[in-house]
Length: 305
Image 1: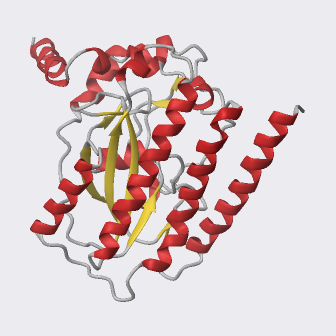
Image 2: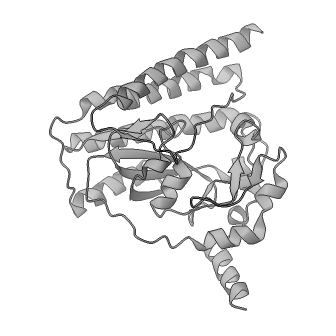
Image 3: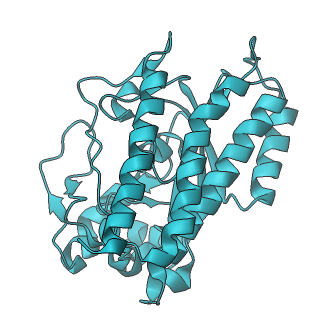
């Protein structure tokens, strides 16, 4: 093993072990909400990163640790009801920081990764844009750009969790780079979009081009949507399948739909995007190339015929 490889490996192992210890502290909390028998396994990947990315990786690691360490700042007797005025102020504040869309949902235990836990069953789900030029082109330093986006988004998520605490609510930030839940499914439950065949969230604002994070909170009266207006995307994806056909590693495998799945399974160990910041499935997705409303109107005309 080269010196650089050894340095990165030692860095990764050190921080991952620390994060695992902090995660276990959440699991041991009274009232923690844990996974169930339907919950997915979290798969770790060894993302190929250049040495120049180490400072950004260090920042990401520290901010992931902060999501756990900051729990001690939660109020002793947190508020559980938020006024419409406060929610509006929170959303305005979030969007001023670069958040694109915000949704709310109760967290189904089957979305929590096996052996993970969260402290509150009420989720605020956040998205942040992945630059279209970066998706559509194989640029140099693409991995570093991707890591910097994770870093910035993670800091924003922590700041928004602190904003809730400052206003009397408890909050547990969930970093976009690693979390206790499967983010695309959580965002779908929150009504922000629909999970495509690629297992990426597809939204009206950005198609498949977003990172996702969440904040679990003591607020019980979040505005949870009963129906998801984006469910038509599932039928559209069944007629498309470009992400499957174009994947250079055959990482997206079609399976028999079950438990509300979209009929595909992503293999992160094989996925070039998970390991090398490949964006082919995003790039080739029609929702990246055309407007959401255009595709919906066109699809409706075809299906009506």
